[in-house]
Amino acid sequence: MKVVALTPDRFSEFIGLVNALAEYEKLEPPADDAVDRLYADAFGSAPRFTALLAVTEHDEAVGYAICLETYSSFLAKPTMYLEDLFVLEEYRRSGAGGSLFDAVVELGRSRGCGRVDWQVLDWNMLARDFYARRGATSMSDWLLYRITL
Image (tube, rainbow, N blue to C red):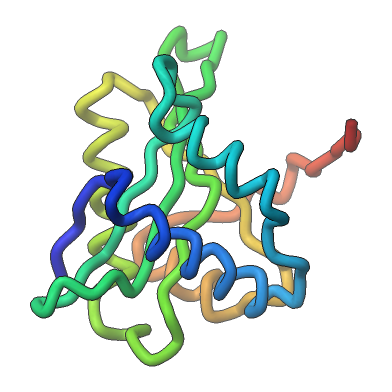
């Protein structure tokens, strides 16, 4: 499975995958104004995130990852934060997810990041097992808090 950077000509494929993730998590897909913001934030003069696509040998996008940098004051290095990693159900266990994950880790290394962080929904055992096979551990001593603005 090949991993490529998201480009404007593949944006509709990317949104299709984002919508598939929303369906998988039983959430509303992004509204039209959110899709417009995603485009601007991916391709504007100061991109807010990096998106990668897993593509088949027939150049079909079957998965995606979104990542961005945060910063660790204790490491005094950036942290690569993996926001989304999703693969269409029929392509799971094809290597697409592993290829995307490895690409995000390598991107973090190339940018001098000290670590990669992400979150997994507690009910998503498929994802939890996927990351455990890669040597990841859950951070049970840290709790996620959120204020929605």
